[in-house]
Length: 327
Image (cartoon, rainbow, N blue to C red; front, side):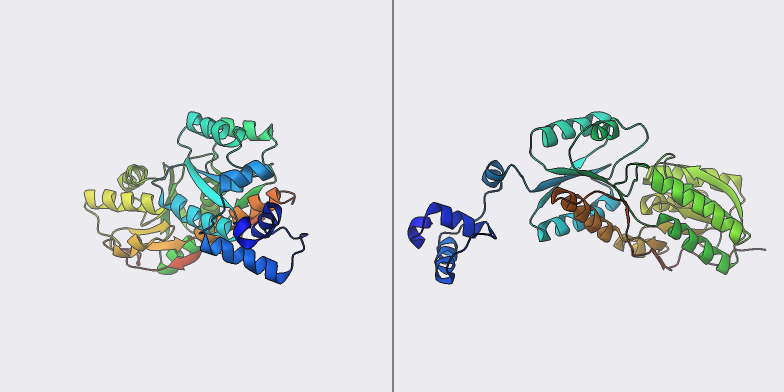
């Protein structure tokens, strides 16, 4: 390429890599760029990493690759990373061993420059390993208190929206399918649910902690239905809500006539369930973008800090909620 443009290899390299303090005549830059276009030049990430000691790659650790929430967050992170000249890769953190393997293989081997951890949980070995490491990292969605590097949404507001909607419909006895205990979004959402119920004069008959899956939602909903008090249920994830619909059908209940249901998170499938599911739309893509910004800012010299993204949750009313049958 340098030969075709009639310049030195050093000059071609500096122009193609955007070295800001390198001065070249406009016609020289044009010849280099035309040569690059003609030869089909594309930057080689691995070679650039060897030259700069910077892979320009970040890794996103998620609980499950099958999780719609993780996919939505990852899309935002990938898009934002690309805009800033970085590559984002995703790894599944389904157990302690997989997370520690990813940490060793990706970070210690120099394949990534930083970690976006969206899979933290109580007593996770990775948290301790990161605390002792110099690798830049942020905790996304699932905050780790005291670290000062958390990027989160206002999940408490999602509970407040759900309870306000149910109270306005006339419900007085409600239940919540929470996520696993010890995970900050789950704990924050459950706490806000109880506080909002008290504010609206509602009775919380049960808060059932469950995995954020269809099976978890079905099991928790069956327990709530068996207790026979709640006229409305708020689930912590769309997957849990789908499981709750199944449990209601199995119990012979009609939604929303016998039981109103709200699911946290809004994905296209929610509109195609029977009945269409009322949801709390969460800014998941934006959360991913903020997470990518947070880690890249660190890589470019900024100090870490806690961030709560400004976009608030939004209530999407569909057919799964209605007034309670008080007869």
